[in-house]
Amino acid sequence: MILQAVIDIAEICARKGVEDIVLSPGSRCAPLTLAFARHPQLRVRTVPDERSAAFIGLGIAQQTGKPVVLVCTSGTAAYNYAPAVAEAFYQNIPMLVLTADRPPEWIDQLDGQTIRQSHIYGGHVKRSFDFPVDTEHSDAQWYASRLLNEALNEVMSFPEGPVQVNIPLREPFYPEPGEEFAYSSNVKIIEELPSGFGLPSNVWNNLKKELQQYKRVLVVAGQGRRNELLYSAIQRFCQATGAVFVADTISNQQVAGETINYHDVFLGAKHLHEAERLKPDLFITFHKSLISKNLKLFLRKQKGLQHWHVQQAGMVADTFQSLTRIIRTTPQDFFQNLGQNGEGLQVSPTFSHAWFELENQGKSVLERFLKNSSFSEFKACHQVLRSLPSNSLLHLANSMSVRYANLIGVAEIEGVEVFANRGTSGIDGSTSTAVGSALSTDKLVTLVTGDMAFLYDRNALWHNYLPKNLRIVVLNNHGGGIFRMIEGPRSQPELRPFFETEQRQTAQKTAEDMGLTYHRVSEELDLAALLPSFFDPTQGAQLIEIETDSAENFGIFSSYREQVAKDIKL
Image 1: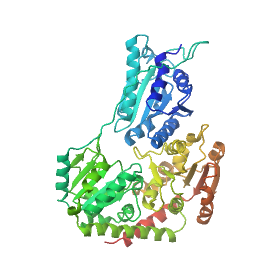
Image 2: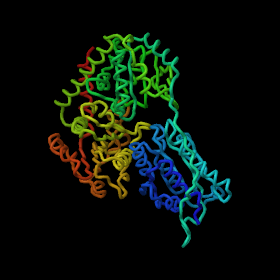
Image 3: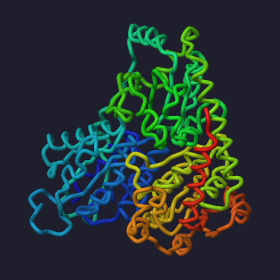
Image 4: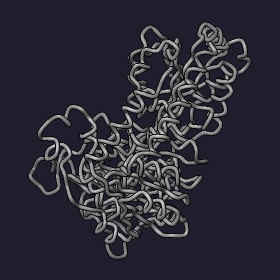
């Protein structure tokens, strides 16, 4: 007999707006599996590898903005969720993690698939709950339904994030012959209405007055979703105040000619970090992390300035070691309010001119270098990004793929939204996240990844849901080429065997096994000829493997850095 309180978990989830469930098969979680699989309003998928399943769930939630439920069996299965749970925590992705468990009296009794699962994710979930073992008493039933409501409300309250519910289950796990299996019609639902995060009028007035003191205002956007209303508010703020807006690729706020997009290029000229004409006296940040190490280093060198961070609630990081004020409102409200009647707030015109002069130089140096350079993964990445279809999605794996993309940018292509797992910046779930994204949109989804990240996450494709709108580009330099780019490991005799971990595998067998059309190229012209059909939306899932040499990639990228240092001037 399956407990009614367990069956009703699925009903509560459905009534509170959950649509997608990602299960991994197991015996201990069978009651949960049946409850979700039989629910008519829920979309349920099964992914055998829990690590991939969790990242696929993350990709789905990233796209839909709705909580995704993960379900796994007891034991180490729950630990395999940990990388994606940590990523969701730092990216503020809504996920409800349901981990089936043995009853508490059997923990540490040498029984199978039994570990200490309560609060297993530590500080990387917003909260962790223990579901009641027995729910015969009406108070226990009330507690079980209240607990599920609290968990889902916590998942969706700002800042969103993962919540664990550990569910001890006794046998039997399956209904008896003739046993009724039905969802309660009167399950308890606790609705939580969101806060408006508004500031009182006197605070706005004080901010407007204080803003008039500053003549060199820099606005910096971290990782976030595309938001046209927010961008319009920032644009009006910059027009009214003369502020400069810097946008990383993953900010999804880049607009050619209006935002500073090539900062990662021109700030590679380290002498500019001391340039007085670039130094702000106030910089304003919002959203999450930056890719650009050059921008982070530049901002950390600026001492004695004011730093305002705009975020309506939650933990705020002092990334640049200069934080002076946290403003608890939404970025959109902040820029709308301070951009009104701001004509008297004009900052120094030479400040804006200097940044845009370098923006033009950065773009020119990059495009000229790539046009004249030999074929490499840097040039290949440029070809791919410049060929992306408009209104498509781009996923970037960590290590060099995301760094190349931040240099190149996507501002020239209309409507491309960029995603990367920069909450924890691991390579372990990039493909799975892209798969989850592709399962949740009709748009074309392109993943640019390295060979190590792709091979690490091959089980992202090991299921029955391969999305036809998925395109994968594997930059295969046969090892961890990023370590050759870093001075420390590059100078060690252990570079190749212990840092790059040279390997000779390709993606061909994986692509063929999993049903993707496979292409391999190693020349610029071959890649250019292939890309139009590769991005044809009428075709099925495809994978291009671009083979390059790690040492040659390093040589070309070193030449690029030298060109930047030589040609960028202020």
